[in-house]
Every structure is written in structure tokens, then in C-alpha cells.
Amino acid sequence: MADKSFPGSVMLRLPVSKTFAKHFKIFFGPTINMGLQDIREQDSQLAPWTMWTASFDGLHAAGWIGLAAGLRF
Image 1 (cartoon, rainbow, N blue to C red):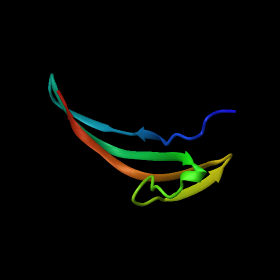
Image 2 (image 1 turned 60 degrees about the vertical axis):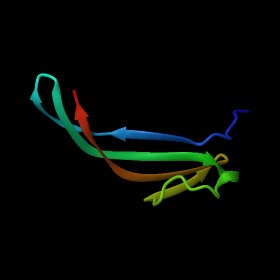
Image 3 (image 1 turned 90 degrees about the vertical axis):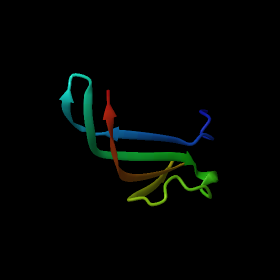
Image 4 (image 1 turned 180 degrees about the vertical axis):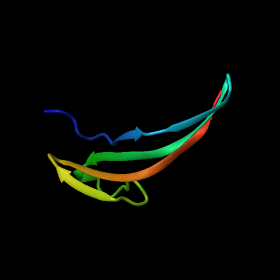
């Protein structure tokens, strides 16, 4: 049986970028996030807010949308 006592997260980023020079780029875009934790440790919060939650096979899952932005050199 697998150990499910770890918190985990998965993030899917969908960035758009704009290049201003050979080594300078700005990127931004939405992210789709999912956090997993052992159902026995549900007292700790995965995210300040969630859009959906589910429980299955001893795990609690929560999902939310975010934003990623930054500079690349």
C-alpha cells in the first residue's frame, strides 16, 4: 500500500509571453492548481480558497485557479 501521508500539489500553467529583446521576455497567464493531502490531515488548509473539493481513496483534493507572471532574461 502506498504512503499517502504527504501533501502534494500539481500546477498547470498556460503562459503567454512577449519578447522585447534577445534575452528579455515578459510572461503571464492563468494557472490551474490542485492540492492533495491525507484525509486525516484535513485540518491544515491547502489554499486560502478553493473552487472545488473532492475526497477519494483516503485523499482530500482541492482545486483553484491562479495567475503566474514574471520576467525571463
